[in-house]
Structures are given as C-alpha cells and as structure tokens.
Length: 276
Image (cartoon, rainbow, N blue to C red; front, side, top):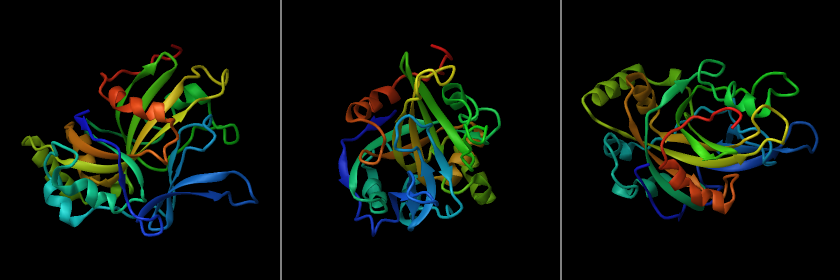
C-alpha cells in the first residue's frame, strides 16, 4: 500500500460506460443469474456468484477481446504516480466506468504470472483446500486466462485475503517489443503505473465442506491500462504501481469488510497456513 483516497462518485450511466457490471440468466430456463463484467456491452468475465458461499471466480469469456487503455494517459503512466489524484488519471479512467462509488487505492505490486493448472494457481491449490473440486466436473475452477498473483495476508484465524491482477486479454496478445521496452526501463529503475477497476468478493465455504473452511477475501484487479507493464514486471522481477478503483457497490462485501481493506493491504505479506 502506498496511499488511499476517499470514496468518491465516478462514472457515467451504465448504458454509456465502456465497462459495467451486469447479471443474466443461465442459458436454460430461469435458473440462477450469472454475475458479469461487461466490456462494450459484451460479457468479458464471469465473476463470483451472488450466494456468498460459492467459490471466488473470475472466468474470461469468449467475447473478452478489448483493452481499455487511454492514449492521453500513456506518458503520465510511464512513470510512478505518487498520489491517486495526480494528473487527472482517476477522472479520465472513471469516464469508462458505470456511475457508482469507488475507493481509490495506490498500490505497489510485484506480479507473478500464473498459468491455470500450473504452480501457484490459486484455483488448483488454495481454493480446492477450502471448497474441494467442482462437484459436477470433478475438477478445480478454471479461469480461462493467465493472471498475476501480487499479495496475500491474514484477515484473521478464519479468513485470508488473496489479491489478483487479471488482464483483459492474455499476455500472449501483448506486443513483444513493448514488453521488452518496459523491461529495459524497469532495469534502469523506472517504476511505471497501471490502472485497474477492482472488486472485493468475500466468499465463505459451507462448514465441513473441505479441509480448510476459511473465508476467502478476493481482491481482484481487472486491468484497464498496463498489460505490457505487468508482463514486463513479472519477467524482470520488478515492482509496478497499480492505481485501483475499487467498486463499492458491485463488490460482494459488507461495508465493514470494505472499510478494513486499506489496513489489511498495508499488512505484511503472509501465506495461509492450511488448517489454521
């Protein structure tokens, strides 16, 4: 954590926003409604289910094809922001978002690229420990995208915070030359800034359902700007700054939980000890 701002109203009407949150029926009948992150009115990610006891989820969908970078912010974001309000970045990216209350968080992150099913995959490891595998498929949840792990810490003896940065499109879509340029800049000491819209989903497994029925606080940052920067930082083992615009109205967390987040994010990093 570098600093946090005060909650503020940002955004435009959902019908005009390039990114918004929505829900839709499942394909068959009037069953449970999927919670969705929409980009340009297309479903981009399926998110954690509303029930509160289902596993944490961010699953990329077939129509997730667009980044949301702003050309007029590129020069400013090539270096470090020292305050969330520097250079009008919040207002500029806020214009892409649906009207609502957002909490600005300015973070320093050292991303680790994770491939689903490989070492470090939250869905194959920590989530299975608390929920087990999917009862229908007999497999862990699958996010259909590489993603970055950046931080985790204890919320209490029965809860743990996990932080993720999720690219709108996979790193394989990035331009190699731009990634290499950022690696070179970082190796010379530059710390660029990325921007994300974020959710805090608190998910609690049913008691007795798995080995470690702890609550998972999922702080998930969906990248608006910074796809090349995050890949470069992961490759070079360097930090980047991340301006997070945390949606308060669309997160699956109570007001008291959201209020605790800045203090939790300022704690030391610590892994969950299974069974504690």
